[in-house]
Length: 189
Image 1: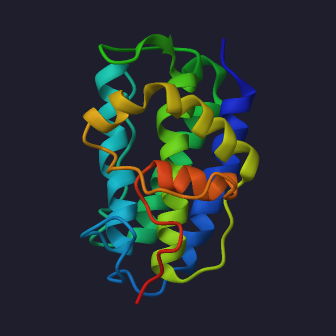
Image 2 (image 1 turned 180 degrees about the horizontal axis):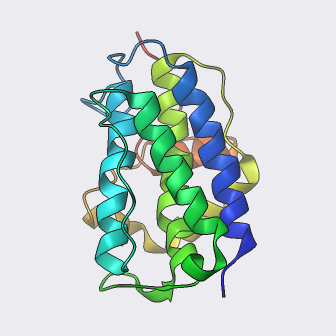
């Protein structure tokens, strides 16, 4: 069974990322991820997810233009394709099977791995592009709570750098950003 929550969460958080993409003026601006630019943030999301989806299901996203060619159009094509997938109960409820995640409904896999990644990279793109943006505190708390018990697995994956220490009383969004290896005080120079 598909979850309307997964479709709505993608619409909300990937939609906010879409606004950041459209608002980015300098695609070569440095991003908080070492060695990345604003363009690299979008490229990461557009490149890794279709292979992940294909590897665990029979769903192939229709590719848009490359991020190198047109980052806005590349992102919008992917956003539209993923939203259509989640809005279609027949597709969203298909099985997704991966040796690392096990088997779960496709919409839950998208929600757990992709939408969460889009959410966290929204902070990166906002910082790289100098746009005013605040992460949703409730979703940040949910992600942080889910990540803490599997911290070593996450670090071992090579996808997350060492945690950046933040005060215990820091806002939950700063705690999440620090947990995933970013300095919450980072700003483009």
